[in-house]
Image (cartoon, rainbow, N blue to C red; front, side):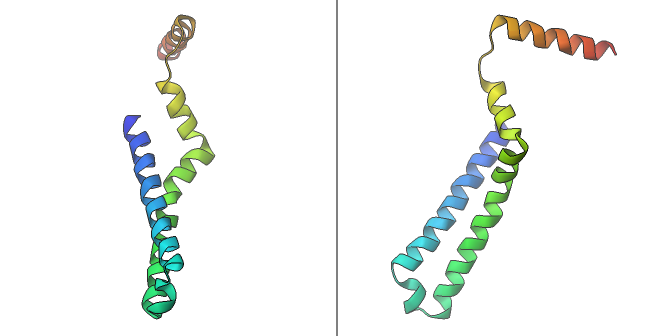
Length: 93
């Protein structure tokens, strides 16, 4: 559980960093001053951002991230007892 949250957080940070570099290259004029190298830099950064955003977006779309965060929240005594009861019923079958 903890590994999935950390993986999604790391992917999100890397994707935002790549988008930041692409925006910086455009705003600082690197895109226009260096010619094809600036264009290549922006395209590579955008491609990296897309690749790193796939995992967090898939986790959000399928609801995995919401489930992981719900599991980390403290449960009331009644909810914990109900979950244990459901687990015992499932294990008997």
